[in-house]
Image (cartoon, rainbow, N blue to C red; front, top):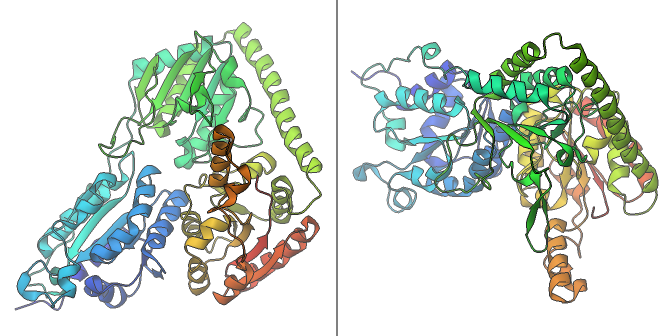
Length: 579
């Protein structure tokens, strides 16, 4: 006798067991069984976020994972939905975030396929389409295999370095009644392993090098993926007065800390460099000619390099995101979540009661503090220099946003306005910023995911939103309105795809062609999109376009008032200079 339970109900059982908080999806018939189970059997306990595009569904899960460190599920419809989502999945892989992607296929049993549609929407091993940039994929062939496939995918996804996984559910398996109970395993015994510690002898060697160094420097890029590391790094840096340069794929270090010397010339002066989760270590150590693509080292000849991270683990055979190979003196495979505290402890032991060294460290701290204050003062001075003029300068816009949110508990989602926000605002807590934006057509979706992560906390989530990016999926604004995901959207609207425009200018300079024609294929103008009207049409607040910097502050205050009252996105369209 069949149970009053279906194959897709087992999937929901596993989602409950692993406490999956949300499901983002664009509707699709191949997972109609799972959809029904989520709504009725699962009682929408993991609320569905209805998305306007499969890429957006993945991006929302991507942003949520960056903000929380935890995964949510994203569901895409068979072959066509999966192909729509490919780029977003690739970016989740590049950014090393855990996204639990589920898909479906028309019945693999030929006799159960509807004419035409179930054939065109079915493929042999559907995961082949994304296998090169997910950590794991599987397509179980019966309901009894669902728990193991789900549990393995979750553990692989959450083991460092984290990344997206994909499970494909056969439509027939979803929709069939169970013939017997399918038990849920004890998931507490199937969790990811403890963090990779790293070789203690190598860590002790690194500690000794840092203590003995005259001009040590810390470079970091992804260590802040664990919010504890944001505070752990402060302890290590302060212990030896080591300046930190934060490359920003996560928020790794407080921006207003006296030892934050990002954008300084510390690399050129360093005798020991400690790299923490820097995937592109070669890039910071060289000077690039952007026209010829040639590079030269800027480091001292005898500079020693210590690298701690997981770059060579889970390296792709397809994507060449492993970056340029860099020679390293002490190379430690370890998770910085545990390696930074261990290294700090070893540095304390190596430092001991060496009064002379401690005096040197105090003097070094005072010198770095002066450099930090000079950098910050320089950025504030640039605001004054570029205060007037239309369109609005980026320093002025960053200042106006910073002033408008100063009294709020705020979070910046993705774009940093060419780093002016990082230079002018005080990023004092780990959750203030989950990391810099990625490529065009990713930011509005990821920002919505970050806002979803902070929904209900009372924090003001700020999205500095490029115009070209929003043009890919303005429907994402509707998602925020429909699901009441509040977010302040401030347009970084230069009415151009200016990153590529700059490249065309370089080509014109190099080849002697007409630089005035560089705009062709690059402008988002004639006509200029009316983003405020688009926002209103999606059920959000919209104001602008604004070209006068004096009008930005009052407009932002009105938008913030709307957000607090309506719990929906508010968009202020500001027209900016190119850079």
